[in-house]
Length: 400
Image (tube, rainbow, N blue to C red; front, side):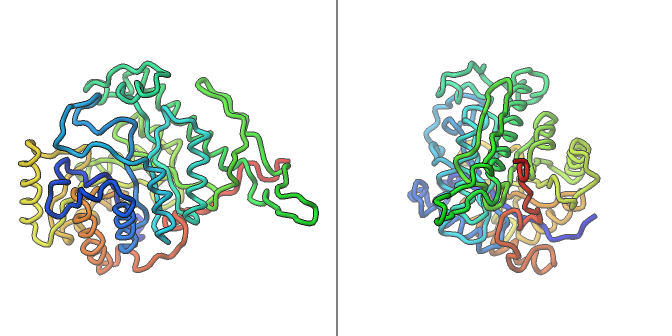
């Protein structure tokens, strides 16, 4: 197994992942809906030399229900558009990767391809994307173009047993394929800027993608030249077999949610089998684990902080991912233990922002560096470079 340094990312969401995070004394809810708030978080993540940040998004208000409004007013409701937030952050940072969420269910793939290619230019090659399926009626009713029944617990437990969710993930795979084709639809040298002849582009180096699928057709080419990375990073969160299959065929990085080492090993093996890979480190699918983290210098302080927030919220916080409470050293121990299961990185979800993000960048990162498990400086300028992924050749190059 590779002993390469770990990859680390953080998932940014509102005031933090605990639903009462905005009420923590260390939070700053008055700044939540400002550009400066998000810029400060990204700058802190970059200070910690993290690979990238992801930015959560959805097409309905946050809720404690699986589907539909819950009527609660004691939790954060409302959020900015993730792609626009990433575009605002991009000029204010230099190395950190920026990975916004954008749904595949109600968004045209042409729009996604254009906005993320633009983000890659604005950031100088640091853009990524987390495609997200929308299987909730509360989101579908905002658009009125398709009838999606209310999501129920039995759906969430076994998505593959319901034809609707197979259709949504098949659609998601088509969206990713179209977006990737559009990113390649301009050859790298299509923009020639030949003043003498008056030719700005070589039209023969722009290509129709001619995608025809059961849900949409896209002619192409893109309106944005090929992105600096060629292909911005595509990532996905996966909890079960159906999204594992989507991730294995469509993305570069998958986030999984094990709760112990054996689960991490089993899920990683399943993904490797699905993607046809022999193991980590071969430059294809990279597997990260998600963890919600409460981090303090004293483990009791971390546990007490969670307990106070649970009391404010009226319920003990649980998550799809494992919930960690402890010190930077204890978190480092856990990450290095789980790495032996075949993981190449972790996406940490700070329970309270900015406190737990700072604990990651100024506590966990130095601890991992002391153990030789994390970089001491950025070694690349692009997001793909941070992860050791090459810039891919365009699929249409030389086809004219």
